Length: 168
Image 1 (cartoon, rainbow, N blue to C red):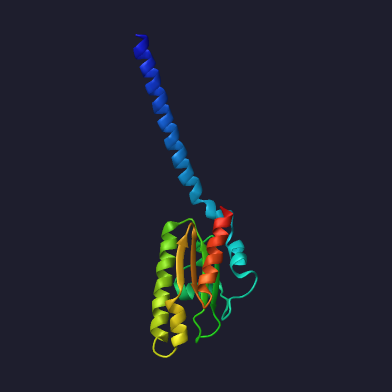
Image 2: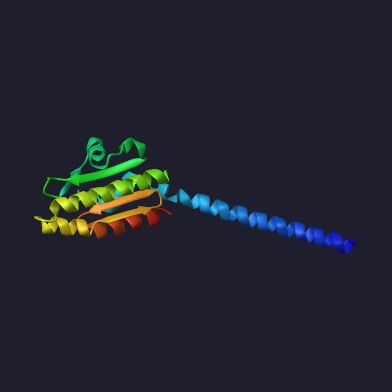
């Protein structure tokens, strides 16, 4: 009888241990999903641009963002948008934060549509601008969407990714 009782206690302890491990695993996944919000979009912007305007771009308004990407910036937790200074330039940068995966996907699709439209417009007569669009960076990282069409797109992306990593 004592042997059976001991086996039952060991099984109960093992079951409890497994449940505890599963709970810790689920908690770690859930808590890591919100880590990118340890840094605000404005702080990411500061880390990427260090207080300087991207060359060839100017700060875009909510209306500019809505017109170019068909989305309401108020739907996001924060949107940083730099638009081309002129119609002959393609320099653009977006840093947008949202906890809604569907919104991130929608913005990523809108950005890719914008890039395709811009490529069609510039392909035949502006090879420099077309080249910038060819090297554009679009990334969804954590709760952020990043887009840069610029001669410095790779450098901006490295700073963006570094800012999010440092916030973890």
